[in-house]
Image 1: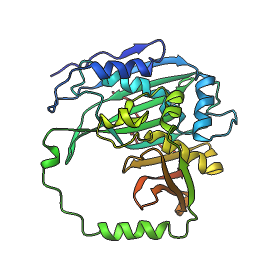
Image 2: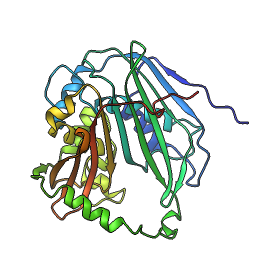
Image 3: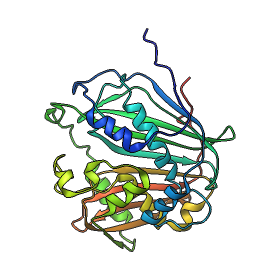
Image 4: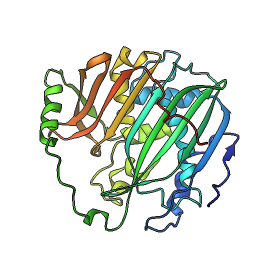
Length: 309
């Protein structure tokens, strides 16, 4: 029976740019490997007002005295990278793809709140394109769970794309038609996403991954132009939803479908659903969907937020 590595206890959040640099020079095998349970914790810190101001500006959130719903994900990102940079983690961090995000907020957080953050990764599952794994995050204030998230990452592996595709479910075409019908009555809100969006969000988040900064650096990773940070797109969507995103308890789900190239013209759409939920998506002018998700009232725990035993 293998023994899990000890919890990494930090007195402050690490530098995201330093963790990215560590990831850039890391040498890890490209083959599948076991993902052990890895944990990291920061017991007390207060969000940086300057960073928060930059985040509000680039995502268009008002300065209302509270942390925007997705902002704790930005705070936890350096911890996530610190986990994936640990020598026990079998894959290179660069090349991991953020495919889904699930956020729960149990109550609104004042911008000057003292918080503790506990993050962990454990296990993986095989998918057609490689391996998926989940990064879990718990944010507490005075010992009370106030925010949590599950961040799903994909690691493509050699030969994964050569596996036979699963047969398309019989109802997939109908599901696509239903999606279009869902948003058919929505009034599209056009966005002009500027070429410098990635650099502006990098200053707010600390995520200076080269795929987001310039076309030249993005081409080295196979992209024709720089791409927007997925969590910038989510943050911008939440800001656009206004009062619906200001309720004390909320659940936000997001699925990242295609990279959003910079610059771009896209449309943002919402559609009311049952029980007060709001579906949302961002589509390009040629009809490709970049992000789709749902904002729902309430944040009941179903065990996903429980920390490792």
